[in-house]
Length: 92
Image (tube, rainbow, N blue to C red):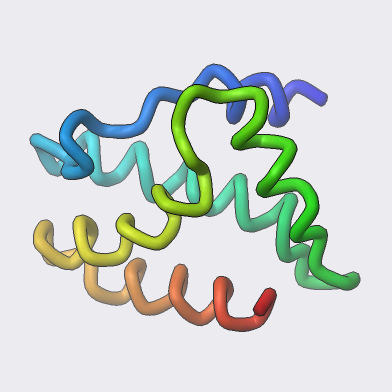
């Protein structure tokens, strides 16, 4: 439950792009937490949770996850971007 609260309070980077490397790292860690909930490694994907997260936030979690790999790559976090894409495709 604590992780869910943190995700619901999370504010993604402004203008769809992290402004600094630290902000990109924070977004990467939060994306990992979201993916651990939505696409757990040991059971079926819970895609319904994306809708629940978006309905409790004023930003679209799915959109943020889709844009994040590009933002991470701009900061040289290419491996992290590729891992995020792989996890998203596993849940599709």
